[in-house]
Image (tube, rainbow, N blue to C red):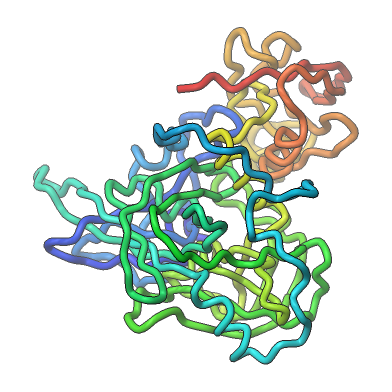
Length: 409
């Protein structure tokens, strides 16, 4: 089972260090107030005297589990950036195809300057309300020469201070540009010269069995990033982080991914980043997951341009429905999105949805979990009217819903 909070990031107990990182909830829709099964993403965790092994970091506190997506940092107006779909990219990441079949040592030489260490610091509270400093370590990928760095949202969320260290040893304080918990993607920025952006590849062109290399700051060990090599074990994987959050279209790899690798690069033998390492399964051997770079580019471009991800908004508290939950609730369908709450005066309310309805289709797409809902809403903007299919008890209802815009905090 995946453990929520920090799948591949390392938590370090330190008296004088501060700590960060933890789990997040889906930003697509409101989250229902209910307990979630234990899960974990790569990130960092506040230490305790009985902290479990690194691969099973403790679940987030209730305040962390329901924390909203981080608001974008105030900053000067930036020139719009497009990481995909432009003939004139602002970002030097969009370079021509790299030569194929490079030796691993050459790939590492090319990528090492583009992979950075991220240290988060924060203060937690102990049993007797005494402050407990904690520190977390993750990894990031340099996106452009303006200092934008791609990483996992769970690596940097809740971090009161974020420090980025380059491969040459130089360190910089980072600002948060924006984070998207539902895709576990975030962008931070440092003010530094001479950065070497990574080349972003095409994850849609990946094939099972293709050689890949994972580069990241595993366990926060000194002396530069850790490198491991493996293959693409599977494509299109989905993992449940909790009942409200599913990440879809993940790359599964047997390249070793350890705590601290979160936000690091999964690259092909052309020295192109094709994924961002994000998760491991507790107790497994050789099973790790990376967010495909095609999805990460779309989210990162919106975070850089707007500070948030614009999606269509339904206005519900969604829960992943499975056979066990369907049986307990005596529902007629066993997969889909269970509506735990309808937010008044939002799109779902206007469309007539009610609590305990089960959404199974939007537009022409089957919706079986929150990850698929998230991807659908990312592709469909506020104001768009789409087909809606749901079950109310045993009755199948077909209608339409006009997507709204998520209220800004």
